[in-house]
Image: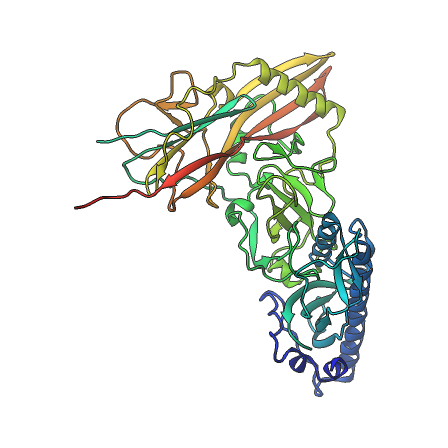
Length: 182
Length: 368
């Protein structure tokens, strides 16, 4: 099922669960790349897609690694993320640390690009993901016991990845919602 | 005509503030702070300092409403403090000029905010501003010019977009309100100030010494708290027991080790947190209702009920509300040695009283 999601895209992933959280209205409406654009634009769009997905994967992998030790006093995320996401991620990680919890295992992830805008500055890519939480569990660090009420099966994620110029492509925002299936 | 008085008095650092509920008379609309910064809509984040149900970080619009009034939240910027230019122009002696400095005493409702680093900094949330009880952190890296996050405003430095995370209670989970994005053309007070230099620290020490030597108003002279509840829809009088000597412009000075320390200080405003989500920002310490002579800035001794002439509030809902007041002064200073200026600037000093619980009830009419 997860593999099918990656192929057919978000609409199939989200049904019958909640749809992806709408992005803030201030976010530029992306232009979907279509067959009528010229080759240069297509190349730019493809490059943007690749760079954005690389940043998103890097962010998720780094966040999972930091959550495994509840490490929040770090700059490792900044290779892949920008504020406000960086700050909110650190807030999350510090809350884990303060509670004496860590995350064990790994989530599943199947990001798909749902929008690309390379015609206005800054270039922006929208990514949707359905993150499987079954094998990524919040536990008490000392005992290893799972934390009660951590029973979210999937999380639907909508991310905004932006070209920050000399900083590269960075995940700027990430909205999430509970999902019942992918 | 029936008039009841409800008075609470509490004191912190040499000042007393009081709240009186007047029965009868229309409600008063108190002045509010208007800042130059602007709130960006749809920019509250779900994640605050405390644990949340979700695991992944989330920057989506929060369901929870930020507790701080957007207008007030926009006011910590010293360049945007209401009345500052006029006050500066009116003052003689030591000029009230940039740089604006904080005394780096960071409290919330009278208690120190825990676990802050030097300069009132939280490593994740940013710099704490005691004027609005919020942490400010400029987005890093700054969004590229043209980003929708700028909302069409200038992205030229020092303009920045900040995440603003406010305190809502003492104790664990520092910065416990949902964060919001806020544009500001200039840095907020205390932002990345760092520790005071030796001359600045001495200036602050000399000023606080002068303040301690001056006559501080007596406290605890009003009826005891918790005597009877206030009433929804009827005006409250708000005042701080601060005498004119500690509010109106004053020039002072002292010599220390051959250096001359000149000060001009003046009260700026009193920000009342009414405990129901609203704030009242008054340009004066308020008018004491039937307070003893010599207490407070002004006093009212008449018998006509009604709203306060300069600082009041009317509750629209019943409940028990923690009420506190933050009093802010401007202190211009200039340090000279043999005619040469060693340091100058303006301290923006605020002190917050502990919260007192204020009960507001519904008036009931019994008919037969």
